Image (cartoon, rainbow, N blue to C red; front, side):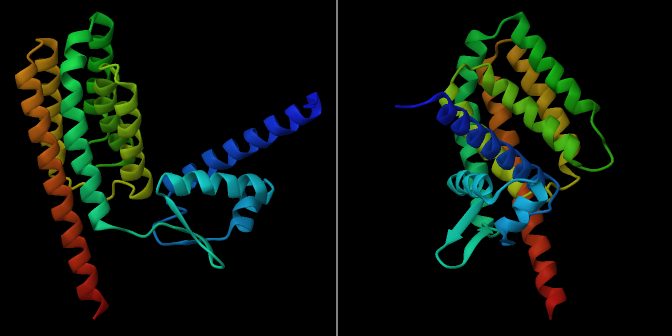
Length: 233
């Protein structure tokens, strides 16, 4: 028989695991944890002021999401940096985002259009000096707002996970500054096309935008890696 005390303990355990999960995600955001870093879960538990059990549970969730890996007898570590993974994440965006545009345009109303415009303006108003985290997340909000308007919850959830991997695991540190103005223009053109319910135009601009960003990011990463290799010799 399940007692009220057992239910309460289970709820407390789930709450603690959720706190640990959000705490570790924040550490990813602030780059306290980076790709390839070994994770000492007891140290994490102490830092988060929790017992080891909910921290381990949170690490298991993050392992399923691709942030963390576990090796028997060696413990947990952050999943290593992977150029191939970054490229695949952008390829997923190229597949999913344009496919959501028809449903978004079909279903969009005044409220939805206002939400998309607010997301656009928030991105345009973000810090311009460099592609800082605030601007990265405003960029994500614009793309996710357009995706949410489609009503395709499963694909939207997958897309959310893709953005989490790009911006939490990799930090978005490889966005070249040269992509700022092109992103501004592309977002404005996407909004204008959606407002006019021009499906072909909206999909075309979005596809080109995503492909250009992927090329710019991959080029930037390869240059950084080449420079790192040269400095090691």
